[in-house]
Image (tube, rainbow, N blue to C red; front, top):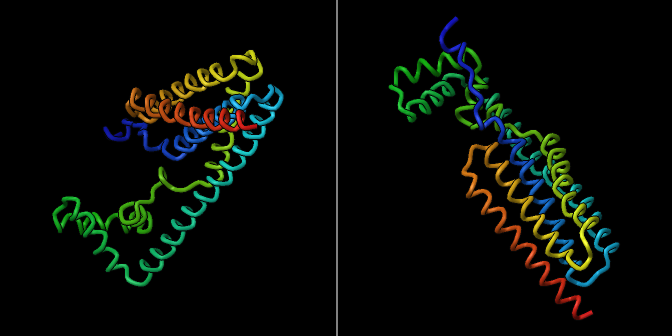
Length: 233
């Protein structure tokens, strides 16, 4: 056994696809639902109406996130498939030119011309399309588009994030609903920011501050609008 076969690494880039959808979904669910609840509560609505608005926001948001992610990632997948089909045709039509193109990529990365040509020849002999997909098109197993996975992850995590402010509405006293929901939402956003940063290997403090700031801003704006229209009504 070689010294390389005994060494296994788990790189964070493998998490990019699902991590992006999960963090986006949970954050969006928490921020949008909490903001909706705070806005409706600031308009002096009753607790049943606030809860109904929150549930409607959860359902609509989860479906919107799922549909949006599916359409967006499907478009990426279609583009990847079209590029791979074009590359397959080019490899069949002129493999020598494709080998020179691949060698040129390796030369640009610092290999000597002779070595670059040898590497390109060996990689194309092993898996020509895989080599061009990875090194020319930037498509790999870690970054390839997965529409259904992204849609389901977004819907599930959006619903999970939205459940926190809804639960707070159920248990919190009506007079203190706005500050309690806002506080719980900001706490939840801080936790989500920290978890996302830890899973992705990013700076935790920066992630927490960023997500809490934008969440607070969203709730402040909707609360202001709710109070304004509530006063008018």
